[in-house]
Amino acid sequence: MHMNRESLCSTENGQAKYFIKIFVLIELTVLCIFGLYYFSSGDGLYIRDSDGNIDEFYATGDVGELAEGTVVEQIYTSQMDCITEAGVLVSDYGKELEGNLYVCFEDITAGKLLAEGRYPARDLGEGRYLYLNLPERCEVLRGNQVKITLTSDCAPQNAPTVCYQAGYQFQNAAVSEQSQFLVNGAAVQGAMCIIVHGKNYVWTGSHYRMLIGAAMLGVAVLYWLEVLRVIRGKRSYCFGLVHVLKKYGFLIQQMIERNFKTRYKRSVLGVFWSFLNPLLLMSVQYIVFSTIFRSNIDNYPVYLLSGVVVFNFFNEGVGQALHSIVGNASLITKVYIPKYIYPVTRVLSSGINLLMSLIPLMIAALITGEKLSKAYLMLPYVLICLVIFTIGFGMIMGTAMTFFRDMQFLWGVMSTLWTYVTPLFYPLSIVPEPAQTVFHYNPMLYFVKAVRSIVMEQAAPRPIELAMCSASAAVMLLAGGFIFKRNQDKFVFYI
Image (cartoon, rainbow, N blue to C red; front, side):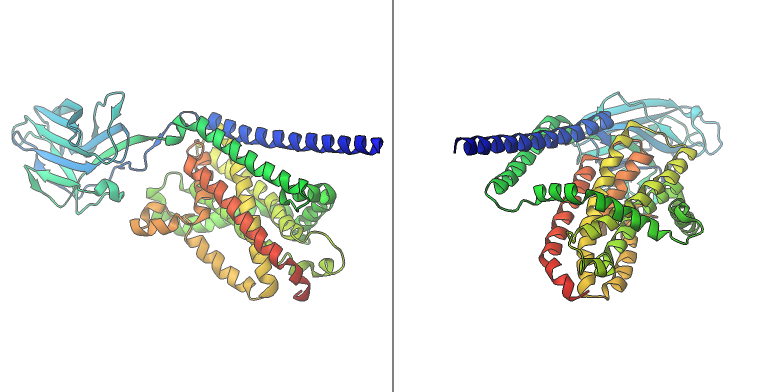
């Protein structure tokens, strides 16, 4: 009895050490992810380029000479916390001007002067933006009304001309709110040709420690709830997954290799298709869409290729998982292994293609002038979230395919529709403001935006983008796992 007690005590101590070891590893992983994001974000964790920027736009007319006594004003609603650049389109139309142009930039809601300046009219060019001398910290509250006022002391025939676009509405609806273009106090339909760029303060920066603490606490609670299930003799999905990886790890590796090799069996180009496929798709779409969107998107080839690489993996992974149960009917009816291994290994084999397709993306980015940056440290995390999301959705589709063979044809329609509602070859800004709300319910939007932020902006994804990638992956995996588990015992009757 004494030996039995010692043996039991030793077993309990060993189990406790095992639970603590796993817990420490999980918490360190969470801490490393937050640490990598902190390092890769830099100042971007605290302040980011504003979505309320006003980019330069072309003029369709002018208001005539801005001679002495004429006042031209543009009022708009600010959507940024700090203005870094502001300019107005003024032209001398090839004339030799005399006198000075005066520009006043003010926050009329707060009654605060942001900047003012006097500019010799002779230094103005033809159809060229005049940039204002802004203070180092030109702060303005979001939602405040901002006014740009132009006057001059120039005599008629020697005065500059202010350009505007008739009927223009700012692309950002919030910026357009209560906007007005006035000439000597009279409203004119349209907007002065201005450019305003700025930054917004990010909430996560000042609350980052609190977020780390909340994440580590949440993970700790979930983990120890799983431990309690094990102690009480109930099934634990987390520890069950660890057991499956230990027991079937070699089999999983072999199935991934088999799926990958089978895909290119008897193919002349073989694995080279992993490089060639995204480039060919990008080339076709570039030829079709570049003339429409190229002028609105910087580095359109990389913009297009980054979206194609991300969505191609998702489309291919789900397509592989779709047939994972039906295609392995002979194995399922003869050999027992956890059935979710089949869709998981199919998606992971597609993940090899994803890694290979990143090579042409990186080459294209470097050739077109994009630079490598520390933001790339977050790329593995984004891709892991994408793989998890695809596994979850693949489980749902694999389950549906087992019961409804027509799902393979429906998925072709669904994937095409999903492609067009994801901004792969067009900017989201061209979508009407009310419809953009619907687009933001598309999880693939955030994966594409996160990769583009890293590759094209050399900046870590915005906190909201990273949070949406993480949440989408977790929710889809839970939903896919639940649906798959509820129906897996019925598979044998339908395959």
